[in-house]
Image 1: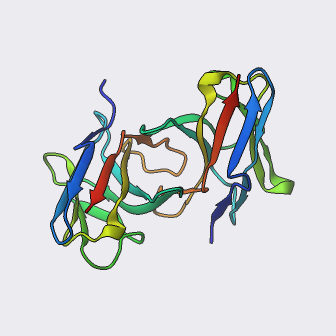
Image 2: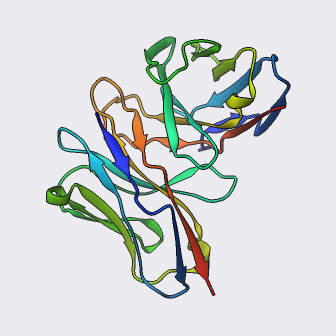
Length: 114
Length: 116
């Protein structure tokens, strides 16, 4: 069965520092991978997505992610974090088959220190 | 082009009452998904609907929960005889008519249900 693991429940970084959020997936075929961000009390906004091609994907707000098939990973990175990046980040994999359902990880809550 | 609309944003019900959550997809989108987010958990898929059809309800609890997406009007997620364990945020997402796995799903702001 498809699954997504985000091993870090909570991360704190200093403003201006680099960031990497980990995501590992389990999927039988070529996965469709997504990163979403959720601000408190809000819905989810898509940061970036990977379907095929270049394994380094650029997204909005200065985020990027790299698909590594050998490691079953799709880690999210940002070179310099801003205070406004504090939010919860969810990695998801497309379920495939007859349905488009997304399978989400449990999320990583990012806190940014001044 | 308005985004996905959900109402109400907050809903309080007493145990045993019914909860009705509404979702209007983005213009031109004919696929709707419902997800549930329990406190401190990720989103869990509940149901996938197209107009007048339930395509995948593998994530729906077997009892008390139902969903519809009529030809006209919003999609409705209905929870009968609510219990405290139903307290959660319920998110709706929509995607365009081409139902391929790489279609982005656009999420609404969610309905936060509290059962007293």
